[in-house]
Length: 456
Ligand code: NAD
Ligand code: UGA
Image 1: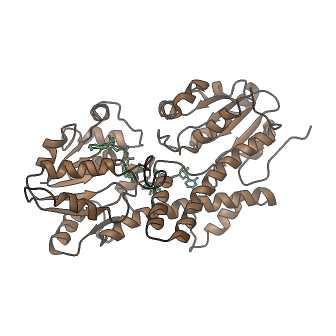
Image 2: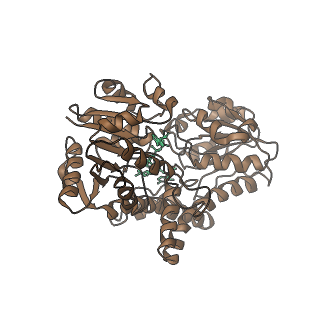
Image 3: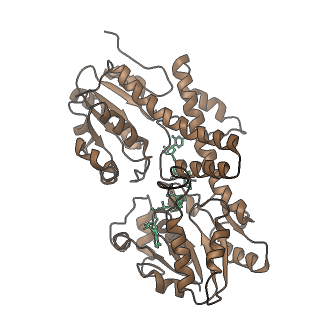
């Protein structure tokens, strides 16, 4: 039996530890956080995050071998293995502002660990960190006066929100990086043994520390790059009457390219793609590689362009003004099956339309609470409406912004009847049956495909 601690009870800490607790009943796992409200939510019937399948697991293991607590100090002393899963957002101040990772939360945990540890520990980097962060962590940990031994291991997390439980239960790979020393190899093996309870050994791969840290940033950069690539192609399709879905299918059947992550849309969102690419851009600049930095930065610029393009297209289609017009936004979450709105392109579109003085009603099955918080002062100008039919009532346009499957199942005839003529429908995720919508009477604007517009 091991005492495992996870510092940071967020999307990653909460979900990963729940699955480890479920799969390793012999280990005792505690998740701590400085945010007492979040811990109380993890202890309640209403978990702080919406993630399909997570409630069931948490309710089955909580208080058996999974515990949530705010007692960071005491739990550090008890644990043999400490996962660090705190937030590492983009720095908003000082050197590297807007690009570099803000490591203040991470460093604070390293200092807490060294302060309260009284026996040997394996410290696992679960947060996404700049390459060579483990070096700094080791320096802080070795500064302790009590001479406690620490091994630092990098075990980046690759789960995606909305499929976190499935991704954890059946990962493509688990990556563990450590030093090539006897104690480094032992630490890597200890962490590998945890995953080996349910992950086939051939999918648990090891690497040196720096490769493991960098692989996480690179994986996100590659995924985001595919989204920006297909979005760039969607712009070209709109000028040439090609259809981006047909192009994606045609290229995706090439095994070297593959079919995943080729859905054109209003751009990638979420808490990580942008921050991790910008972090990599910063690292490239730091290591004197401006051409490499510029290459990756373009992925983020293309993402911004796609959102700008979507709104510009709405404006030009709606007679160059949306001022005073009601627009219903279907979706606030950055993707389906999550209540997360961090960096959501839906909210970027919402802000852009507000600046054009549109009247916005936004709907979402799970993310309205977070959307309201994220919009800050601008939330006062927005109507938050759980019912999509009510959101569309009296609207000039509907813009579909999140790929919730239930939006494909709505009664669009009923929606059409409630809207102002001529009704516009902008499908920012190519989720809907465009021909059918056109036949109902909508002017339909898919992404990367010819629009379907009724002639007067
Ligand atoms: P999050 O913001 O949801 O959670 C982080 C938690 O850490 C917060 O609740 C915060 O209060 C807590 N925290 C900060 N400092 C602390 C301290 N000193 N002691 C105790 N708790 C502290 O973040 P997240 O989405 O779970 O992401 C965590 C890390 O994992 C990030 O580095 C992120 O890049 C990475 N990651 C995230 C995802 C994802 O899907 N969200 C996937 C893979 C990797
Ligand atoms: C992503 C990665 O997929 C995870 O492997 C990684 O662990 C995680 O980031 C992280 O480090 O946080 P996540 O952001 O939760 O996961 O969700 P994705 O499914 O990757 O979607 C990201 C964004 O890209 C969403 O806004 C989604 O709508 C968009 N997307 C994705 C597209 O527009 N088109 C696609 O084809 C795929």
